[in-house]
Length: 273
Image 1 (cartoon, one colour):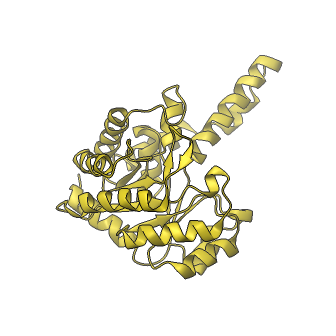
Image 2 (cartoon, rainbow, N blue to C red):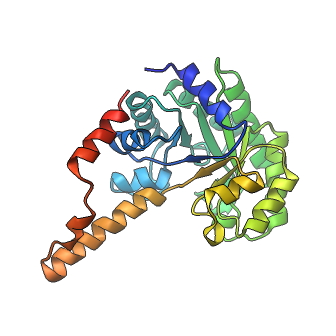
């Protein structure tokens, strides 16, 4: 089993050149299958984990999330970073405490977003930057590299002001964020514009705008592509489709999409530390 420091150093190195895909498992089994497929690092999915235990996004407590992260980190040799939502509190001090607890849970990175779910509003740039700054200070105090990803939630929340999004990312950069992220940037041109205005690695949410591929994102300078809840939602789609077929026709056509048992077992074995 790799040490947390070894995982952290490997994760940091992934951000130094090229572009890597950063898929999001929702339990240890999916994490091991993704590891067995050859991915180099994993991210938690806030919505995927919430739905997997029967609740909606933003209904998970910090303790629940950290217990989940602890299981993932112990269950795979890959670096695991977490979607830490808004740091599970409004104050910079709470964000810093969340990062310290995340490091204790075995994580080597985490994201802090500028969305306040209780008010359904975006924090001001100054408030958001202060929260990122506190998270970065807590991360930099760890005895290994712990990467803070600072998220501007504008486009995810229906605010299409790219200039404001860039101003936020620049403020997070000045606050020390190691990686920057703005989910749902609307086009490849928008991503290019963001990249021209920042000097930190940029994470892009897949699927990319207009169906662009990872290689096309890499060509313009994107360092990292995460999937959010996309993998888990795809699984849910297959589950609902199979259930509807059974309910409506009593047939079993969905079985043609099953993962063969030998392949499943081989991937689980390959992904087990």
